[in-house]
Image (cartoon, rainbow, N blue to C red; front, side, top):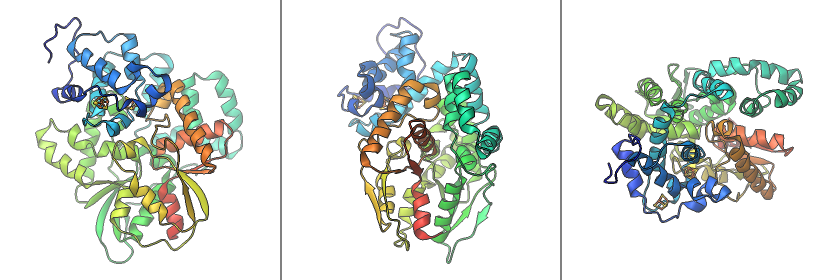
Length: 429
Ligand code: SF4
Ligand code: SF4
């Protein structure tokens, strides 16, 4: 891949990912938007520095030693650098491909091993998440959860303590499954396949129900295939591309026959929209994956496409809006949620400084990299505090859990809601 003489075993990056590194012209325009660079000021923790390191790894000019790998581990894969890049560098393809190769030689130990096992074997199934969190939910109901958190803060390793702390307060003990079919109100306009997400179905089922209620109100027949599976983002980011590919194939088959496929979870949506790329080396899946990607929508963009009438109910409230990375940078969606919220009479949307700067959640980054994650969420909370709002709107469960739990930890009164929660209230559905 390179004319320079390798001194170490080159990392076997795919040609397309390697070419992404060559697209970088080192202009540095992405640097101010990078959460890690703007926190510690290190070139090696900037997009440009990481691209240089990844290319050097692929050329065999550097060893994948501890310090090199640390700089790559600290990347949130938030894709803010892609939004800023004038050269169209698809940074996420490069970092994800590099991580797959680096992860292959890793053997996590102790708490990290347990966390990795949970991430791969519990998180991708809603019923396993519900089962794993049931004792905590019971403790919340009987009022001993805060005491349990205090004890576990002293006993548990930081990663496991963070997992506990992320658990939302309230909600049902066991979220009921969605129905398989929801008929439209009035004349049918299209059939929409609904993707509920694993954490979404276990912990944010009411938001899923609100999204479905809005869709049926605007003339969509909604189907929820029972055979849908995790989007694969967890596997993909944990360096298990084969696991992600297997799940992608299941989902493509599950949603065939729908006119449009929708999710209300930005993290899942970004992954689902990437299926065409994920399967680009499997010719028998190329067309089906391409069709799936074309049909895929975030709930905010689909609702705007449906051109809804003005909502009938006012909400007299001041709120601010946080741009989830996987919506703003991963899918380029910033206007639709604001457009929908601005239709609600009485709702005052206060601009949030650095609204598209990562909150430090980034999938399981907040568990794996608690220090950088906490610096970023503290910065996010300080910006939210400045707005004077006690409600923050966001379209991703990962951000919701991170921002809500860290606000609680710091004693800040803050409610987090999804745009569809406010819209359902405004439309009275
Ligand atoms: S993905 Fe985010 S954290 Fe990683 S280099 Fe780009 S901007 Fe920085
Ligand atoms: S903005 Fe793009 S081209 Fe410029 S340094 Fe960043 S990644 Fe490279």
